[in-house]
Image (cartoon, rainbow, N blue to C red):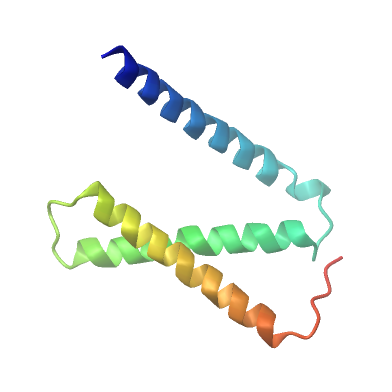
Length: 100
C-alpha cells in the first residue's frame, strides 16, 4: 500500500510541477518579443487545448453518459496530434520562417 501512495504522490507532484512550469512560461508573455518562438509555442498550445475541448464536447454531446478516462485521453492525444500535424504541414510549405 505504501508504494501506491508513493506513486500517487509522485504523479501529483509531476502535475504540480508541470502546472508551475506552464504558469511561468505564460507569465513571460510580456517580456517575449512578438513574432518569436514564444508566440509560436503559445499559439500551438492554445490550439491543442482548444481542439481537445471541441473534440471532447462533440464526443459527450453524442450522448455518452458513462465515459472511460482512457477514451478522453485518447481523444485529447488525437486532437494534439492533429494540431501538430497541421503545424508541420504549414512549416513544410514555407521556405523560411521569420521569427524575431
